[in-house]
Length: 347
Image (cartoon, rainbow, N blue to C red; front, side):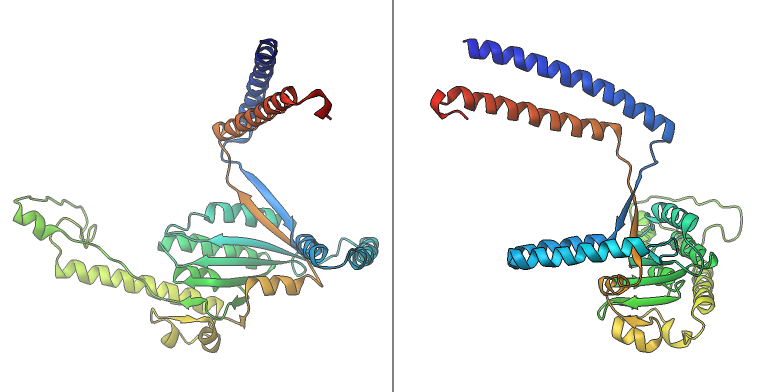
């Protein structure tokens, strides 16, 4: 009975403290969110050279004899100290960005902030940017903006490389083409330089069910093809002409950045795997992004820059509550275990 009473008092005190802390923390977080804006998010900066060496050390520790591992670590420490002494502001840096595209190129919001941040400190003619790109393309306007963001890097005089591990097709390839150098894995899909539009039409279904559609426009070509109304040959011709114009703009864009491309061969809407794309001049090198990054370690600091999505206040508080609950339960079971032990068994 005494145990239950003591535990009840302990639990009440603990919950009171936790709730008070959560209220204070919630108020502070809410204030910071109001000051910075809820969409601010955070940047995650990772020096890939260091992470690579740490991973290597973990593996060596697991498979090498302890004495040999210690000798290797001592040697690395000496090399690190020597490098730090000779380190200067002129150290070469490569900034790594990652873009995974959907139909609307939604990640362009993060990409533009990452690029703005890197351009604020990157040195023209010295530093470089690598974009690890994965996208099958999407809306013309969305990918046009994404490509324009990468063009900012070129305009600033920063060397730009794009690495394709899986796919950069259509709008994805339009982004890749901005780079001075494109590297791709052997079986990465590249190309699909074309424009496509698919519009369902249910006009006949509506007619069979005696449903009328009134489509009113001001302007001859305000609507060319529609989903509900009856499409005309004139509308189809105009819509096709618009697709052709977009395709020509796509080709002109590629010609500007990759003038050696034979567009009569590659701008047919087809796609190719990396090895064939190299022969066609669509890419410049066969390599994975990992291999390309590791090759930089001996000469450059490789720094990954990622804009992390913002966390809502509710999500942050939920995480705090879960952690507090875990701590309370842990302390409870520890006390329960101690109560149940024989006095001679306690530590």
